[in-house]
Every structure is written in C-alpha cells, then in structure tokens.
Length: 279
Ligand SMILES: [Zn+2]
Ligand SMILES: [Zn+2]
Image (cartoon, rainbow, N blue to C red; front, side, top):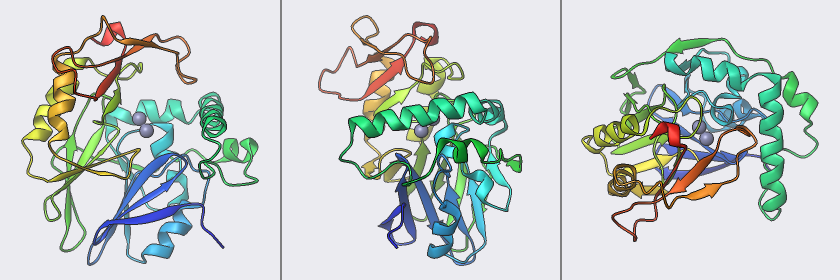
C-alpha cells in the first residue's frame, strides 16, 4: 500500500519525512535514531518511522505548534521540548485550536487541489479531535546533546517564532535543523512570538555555528548557510511601512500583520511576517 508519508534521503543517514504540509527529519546513528518533529497527528507516523528504523528513538519537537507536536501521542517514549513552549503546546492541542488547524489544512488543500492529500483519505475531524493530548515530555535546553552513535545533535535555543523554539546542530554532517525558527518567510506576529530583536539575536547566534546547510520545518530543500545573511538583512532592515498587509490567519483572526521585506536590499526575497507590537 502506498504510504501517506514520503521519505527522502537528504544525506546518508538523514531523511526528510513529508506529509500534512510539514517536514520532519529522521536522523539515524549507530545505536539510536532521532525524529525531529511529529506533525499534526493525522497519519500513522509512528508506523512509518518503524518501517525506516528499528533503533531506539528520541523524539524531539522544534517547538510546540500544532503542526509540529500533534503526533507526539503516537510514541511511547517521552518527547523532548523546550519548557518555554509547553504553554503554547497545550493551547494548540485544545479542541478549538485543532478545529482551526483542520480548517486551515482543508483551505490549503482546496487552493492547492493538485497537491498530494494533506489529510489521509477517509480520516475525519472527529478522529482528529479524539487524538489524546500527550503529556509525556522531558525538557531540553541549550547545549544538550543527543548521541546517536557516530552522529550527534546539539540543542540550540533560537527564540523568535516561539519563545521555546530550538534548532539541532549536527557537527558530523555539518547540518542545522531549524524547525520554524528561521526561514525565508518567518512568522513573528503570533501572540507567543518574541520581539524582533530576539529573533535577530537568534540568527546571529546560529551564524556563528559551524555547518554548511540549513533544513527547515516546511521545505525539504537543504539551503546553504549563507541564506542566514538574507534572513538577518530583512530582520535588521525591516520595511514595516511598505509591508504588505496580510489577511488574518485562521489561527489568529484578530491579529493584523504585514509581510515585510528588507528596506536596504530589494534583491533580498526573504520576508518577515510581523505585527506592529512585535517591532
Ligand atoms: Zn510554528
Ligand atoms: Zn510550522
């Protein structure tokens, strides 16, 4: 049977797992594997991961959002999350928020009807709402290291998108997994997002780390580290005045925000989605 999830080898021992419009990563070492993010929890992710590796598994969340931590309940082991994101995780797992998430994905599916299914065929909202809310967590903080055997992943705190966003640095493969913490169109307008200056400091911190490619939470492309220069340029030279006023999201119907570009460098395509109060 064709699987709902799709895997792709990024480099030997590192797979992206696509499905539900979010990207997870599975990193396989000699004696452990690590899954970075779980997704909404519509499909059988745990079964899919088992088809790829039998090794004992660490499950780590980049942050607490509905599209990254919703399938945690499928795993028997505790999941690792930064304590600063526990509150947003609980909020995102409420019935009302799950309904909003369901609506948002269905809306995306209607617009991009030619995409693969974002929700498995026949899977219902009632099934989704009945998923248990996992409370089986262990905290992770800056500098903690997951040793998988021959490959390690070090936790890097990157507050901005959410207060407890983390990235994982893999020195052996020279990769940095960023979740939603930094990308070409970062969302900083959410109630839980930090001020823009905190996000700028996170980028500058990651720029000092030794790696070649960055892998994000919604795109399976490995981007060269130099993209961080563009992300920092737009964050530091944000043209809020000329920013495009966006329609409020399903999740945050009361928040007005703009998609802003760099005031200094018109060739820079990176954007920051931000509200006035986060400037
Ligand atoms: Zn997010
Ligand atoms: Zn996300």
